[in-house]
Image 1 (cartoon, helix red, strand yellow):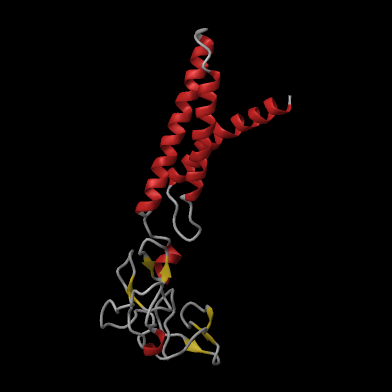
Image 2: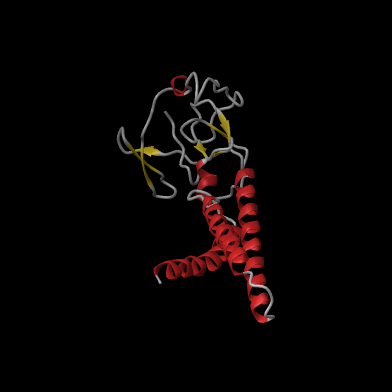
Length: 197
C-alpha cells in the first residue's frame, strides 16, 4: 500500500514491513496498519450512526483508502488512519493538527464567555468592597466576598476547561485563566487564613 509523508505529501519509501522514511524530509515513520481500504471502514462508529464516505475520492495521504471524513480546517478528504477527532463533529487531517489551524469551537466559546463573565462579576465585587471601605459606607464584606470567591473560582474552572492540548488556544483563554486566578487565589488564601485563626 502506498503511503504519503504527512509533512510534504510525497511517497514514503519502506525500510521494512514496519518502517518507512521520507526521502525529501529525511524523517522516519512507523507503519502501524496496512489493511486494504474496504477493511478500514467500520460498519458503525460510536452508537448506531454508520460512517458514510464523504466522497468517492481517495484519502489525500493514502490513495488506496477511501475518504471517510473531511478536514474542517483545509477541507481535505481523509481516511480513518488520518482522522484526528476533536469532538463536536470536528475532524482534522495530520497536517492541520501539526499546524494547529483549527478555530475554537462553539462549546469552548460558551465556556470562555462564561469564564470572562465570572471574572467581571468577581472584579465588580472586589471594587464594591474596596469602595465601601474607602467611603466608610455599609459593610459589604460578606456578600461581596462570597460572590467574588464563588464567581472567580467557577470562572477559573471554566477557563481551564477551554484549554485543549492538541489545538491552538486563543489568547482570551489564557487571559480568563489569569484574570480569575488573580481574583480567586488571594480570596482563597484569605479564607484559609480566617478559618485557621
